[in-house]
Length: 629
Image (tube, one colour):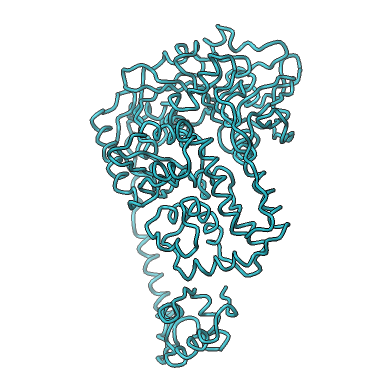
């Protein structure tokens, strides 16, 4: 809806004069004339509000025609009756046709076989970065597949991906700062705070602008007037701007920010928001109805142990809600610490939603979940869990003793390519009944005293991932997702843990298993909050930028970068050029380090940390970063 009172009188007079001069001018044309004359951006609805208030609006719809409307064609009633009589006479004179027997359709045994293959799904559709694409037809798994056809298909998708990577931008290394913002809060922090203290109406892009200013301040661009000159900087695109703001627009919002009074209330609200945003969660404890307690870290990396990586409280609560409480998304655990312990099968039974155990005892459903911070203090507790079947996936790796048992059935494999991670694997699904019988023979399904049994025929499956059709297994995914195709299970697991066990989280889980639960790295000091009372409100941007940089050094950069000052970080990380493209299913960023770049291996580890952090943009698309060599 247009707002008239925001325009100066000369703008309104100009619109009315143009409309009276040429009554056929539309709102789009008038908006363009205003933009050209007064150097301001106006919407069509605002222009329409001006001409509507002056009763100069054109009538809606097509202009009336002076010609008389054409008469509708009609058959005279006598002629219509005559035609009906003739048709009836013809029907009576015709002889009935002999019954026609359709030939029996012979069923193709290979067609029925392909339908009987579990998880076959739609083999012709390959989910991609945008709309689903029609893939070359691959023969059913029972007859094998064409390796040459699959290879050509992968090369075609890779070529398409290379062409849609976007435009080369300066400062794409700032994606790590943006990743920190997305991980710390799903809603803008500074924009929402400033809106409470600015009485004037503000557009939606104001929040994105407030997210961008701290990053520019961190790079040394502290004046609002300097930001508009960086027209090709990646921060504009990373924050959702199709093009940089004009100097007039930037100065207008900057002046509004400067009008905020430096009150004690404003800075207390800022400090409260900052403490809440940078609060960390270390691990979850799940209490089952039968008294069993199961632990997992706040990233759901390690099932059965809480010594994995911590997560910011916002992301931890979101993951707990989506993946466990409501289970709108499957809970995807990277691994279990050591062998498949009783805690793993207790959790599997709880996810099955068993109503009761043996002899009428209470079942193993989740009763409550408690969230703990790095100091072991409770920060949240949830006791309302719907009674339902929940879905999970758990990675099993070559170092675990159950791996060979689960990965030995790889008779039929199908090729798999994921466009987001650019990985090629071969997938085989093991029969659930054989899997459960063999685990039961080892006693792995026999619960401890008082723990519930998995009901007979529970749909536990093993999905094996191989590097080549005849090669050794890379890993096995243990899951109760009975209705998902094996490739869909692998795709979901790979999107959550793209580095598999070769990334920082995988190395952490392996080290936990070797050290018996000892943490690999100790958490750094909590984010300090300086007192800014009595100073200019614009200083919160500088303080917030410093806090984001500290968070990046602690959680993403690590290694030697964690000891760099801001000048070194800008020249080594934040100034990297690259590409950015927001696809339907992923927010894809490609970094382009210079040919001579001494920190390439460290940069690769940084990218691995961010990719397995489970970060999504405001549209819910996962962030994925690649390095262009």
